[in-house]
Amino acid sequence: MDVLDILLRAIACIAAIILLTRLHGLRSFSKMSGFDFAITVSIGSVLAGAVTTSGTKLWVFIGAFAALFVVQIVISQLRVRVQTMRAAVDNPPMLVMENGRMIAENMKRVGMTESDLWAKLREANAYNLDYVRAVVMETTGDVSVLHGPKDGPKISHEVLDGVKRGAAT
Image (cartoon, rainbow, N blue to C red):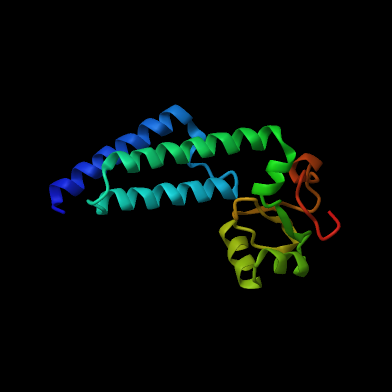
C-alpha cells in the first residue's frame, strides 16, 4: 500500500464521516450515553481499517460507517421512546459523594477509588469538602461535581433526577 493510496482512502473516509455527521446532526459524536461512546470508538476502528487495509474495497468501509450511523439513529430514537431500551443501553448516573461525604458502596459499584475522586474534585476546583454538595458518576463515565457554600441555594430536585443514591434507588 503506497502513501498516495493511504492519503486518498483517508480523505474519502473523512469526507464520508463528515457527510454522515452533517446528515445525523450534533448527536453523532456526543457522549450522552455508553452506546454513543461505543459507536464513536467503532467509527474510529473502521476508519483505521479503511486507511490501512488495501485488500478491502473502500465502499465496504463507507458502508460500515453508514451502518454505524443508522444503528446510532435507531437506538437514539428507541431510547427516547422506549423506557426498556433506555434501561438496556444506559448506565444510570450514581451519586458517589453527598455533602462532603463519600458513599463508599456506590464508589465500589462504579469502580471509583478515593484517588479518582480526589482528582475529580481538584479538576472541578472544589477546594474544601465542606462545599461539595454532590459528586455524580454520569451515564457517560464523566464525573460531575456540584459545589458551593452550605448556606447557598439547595440543589434542585430536577438536577439529581434519575441519579441513583444507592441499592434501593
